[in-house]
Every structure is written in C-alpha cells, then in structure tokens.
Length: 223
Image 1 (cartoon, rainbow, N blue to C red):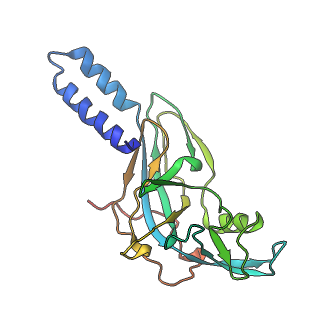
Image 2: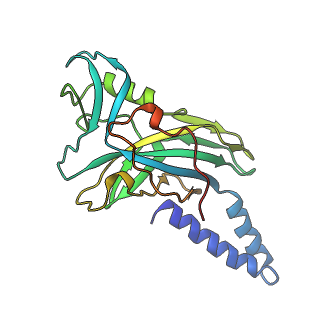
Image 3: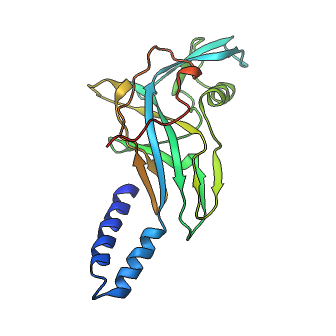
C-alpha cells in the first residue's frame, strides 16, 4: 500500500472516530492527534522530457565536448523520460519537526520504484556517445535542480522555497504520449501526505529543452 493511500485511510478513519466524539471522546482525541502529526507536501508535475541542451557545454574526462544529453533505457524496454516535479510547499505540524529529503521522492510505475537521484550510468547518453562518469551527472544536476538535497523544516511552519527535482522513469509499452504522461509522486516516509496540484503534464515546446524552459514555480491548483 502506498504512503499516500495509507494516510488517506487514516484520515477517513479519523473522521469517523471524530464523528463519535460524543460517545467515545478518548478515541476521537487520539484520531485527531494522529491527523495533527501529518506533514503535507504539495507538488506540481510540470513536464516530462527526454533530451536536454546544456547551457554551458563542457569537456569531461572522456568523449570530447558535451553539448546535449538524452535518456537511455539500459533495459531496452521502451521510452524513458525525466519527470519534473516542482515542490510547491511543505507544511509541518506543530507536533513535530521534519527534514525534507530529495532522496525520498519517488514514483511507482508498473511495480517499479524510481527515486529522485543523480543520473545513473547508462540511463543517459551524451551527444558524444558517453553513457557513464561523474562529471556529466553533476553538470546536469546543477542546471536542472532547484533546492537542496536535504532541508530541515521547523515544527509548525510552512516552507514555500523554490524546489525542483527530476526523476528518471522508464515507460515500457507506453502507448500514450510519454511527454504528457502523469506520474503520481510519493514520499518514502510515514505520516507524509502528497498533494498534487492536479494540472496536466505540459509537454516540452521543443526537444532538447534548455534550463530556461523548466518552470521555477508551481501552477495554481486545479480542482
């Protein structure tokens, strides 16, 4: 069961218990306390893309000057994309503090989890044919990520700092447009509720895209 599903179940059970407050005051109080412990992370999946043009071409230790990069599925199971997630806000209850960690952001597609992380070898290919190395992931991260890998957030506060993270996702046998395919975001920790802005995933206006084409902020929530 996904973290978000489990929390929603707790919310529903809590509401039922709260509804019985007249007869079972202690149970209602415990349910309310459980709901007060939940951290809420609001996000917007702004786009998916599979090609990137570096703002600053560079020369890694092998392969010559790199100007662009594309996704590469090492399992050869079909298209792969970098799904882009803007974190709109992180709301922490008064009852606890919280450390937001990039490494806990993930999607689950066809029973496979994909986590936010630096580029892994052979999941990318440069225009010079290089598929591994540490220099290329570092440049890609610098140009595409907003926000720290880890941020402590005090109890009882709401952080709306600009945060943007990418997740490599394989989309095997995907018949619909991979550039606009929605992928629900999860956080690998209990008592964290992920809330989507529920906007359509906007395909890139051109491929490869550049850093200036990546949104820095979230779009308004859509009901």
